[in-house]
Amino acid sequence: MRAPALFTAAGSLLLTTLAVAPAGGSTVVPGAAELRGAAVAVARAADAGVTFGDCADAAELPGSLRCGTVSVPLDYAHPAGQQIRLTVSQVPATHKDPRNSKRRVPRQGALVLNPGGPGASGLYYPLIGLLPEWKRIGAAYDLVGYAPRGVSPSAPLSCQDPKRFFKGPAQAPAHPSESYKRERIAQARAYARGCAQRAGKALRFYTSLNNARDLDVVRAALGERQLTFMGSSYGTYFGALYATMFPAHVRRMVFDAAVDPDPGQIWYRNNLAQSAAFESRWTDFREWIARHDDVYGLGDTAEKVRRSYEKARARLAAEPAGGTVGPAQLQGSFLSAGYYDTYWPHRAKALSDYLKGRPKRLIEQAGPRQEDAAEAENANAVYTAVECNDAPWPKDWKVWDRDNTRLARVAPFVTWDNVWMNLPCAYWPAPRQRPLDVRTGPGELPPTLILAAERDAAAPYQGALELQRRLSGAALVTERDAGTHGIAGGPNQCVNGYLDAYLLEGRVPERRAACTGRAEPKATLAP
Image (cartoon, helix red, strand yellow):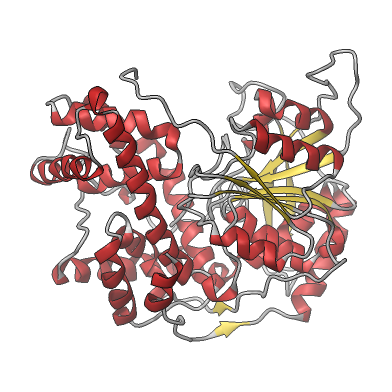
């Protein structure tokens, strides 16, 4: 399940019994040719550098965002072959100390940022430097973002006509019938064929390993001898690949909302783990609504809130709101609340209004926006290509059906939605890669910093523990009893203190540290 881009920051035993080893199939193990090709591309980028100028479509944005391009090989085994131009953005270091206007802050280099995905663009991510929580970091670093390969405008990948991407209103059964499953299987097969037809032979080169190689080329083009990087969500995975592949090139790395990098988890089992974790987060949300029954009137227990939600689902199945919002759109809107609890008051109010005969808020929050279709289709295509290419997936539908039928009995909220999101990987036409064993030994890598919310559903906490175990010298900061997906630079000053100490001074906790969770959102009837 793709995590939304992070501009804020802006049950293991159960899964052990459910998940089986993904079925085999043709796998590709990159080797010496890709290693040599990456070195060639890095040397070429170091010579070429980046020329920054105006950014397209950014005239109305605040700040001093500038854009340029960096060329990377489509296939690192053939570095002289077809090239992809990655669009890179930068907000130069301000050198202004927000705590002392008379002090000029020395520049520490470039901080490269990635918001996750796969399929999310980081082009506008450097604008976080305008936020108060980021001003100290923005004073010392050029904040750099980029659109990874395949993400518009970096040689955008597409799998279907964007005009057909938003299918609404649609159903979203928590326990689908056999006929519904057959319909979704046919759609997954067609989607996989569409990716192959539109991308051709290039499809196989959209991988996390190539994203890590691209990151090293971007580093060289920026003139940085070593990389300072912050990746969120999926960005932590290819950041961990980078740390394993190029440990001597690392200066500092922050992993925010860490994905479990265990090769056996990539990606089939990680998606099972996500579905289980979202059920717990859905319970958190319903309990919060129940505590504010005087505001929303959806029930004073989590179970009563669930019944209110199911009542809305049934009503939308019979008559979609505004002709565009059915059960699937409702579910997608409430799924976003599993990522960010700042959405909780808005979603609760929309549900309350809808059940009282006022659908406007729900339509605004859950209805598809056709003006976003091209961007959404592109993001979905890159997500699918990267995850399907990265590792073997079960090819037998019976494996998916068995595992997820069992899981949906205890975690029905998003289990089947997650299946449909990833099912094209069962029918993927391109060769699969074998996941790299993320691991560094003592002294191979400088200290790195992992940030994690204890109840994060999109990146379950076990992933942070596993990443720390695999990266020697990594320190872990945990936000207790919190579930927001991505905690760097948010409202928790304790977390931000550790982030600043690391990026600005290179200091990390001895091994693990904890911060009290943020305050829960306030119930409100305001828009």
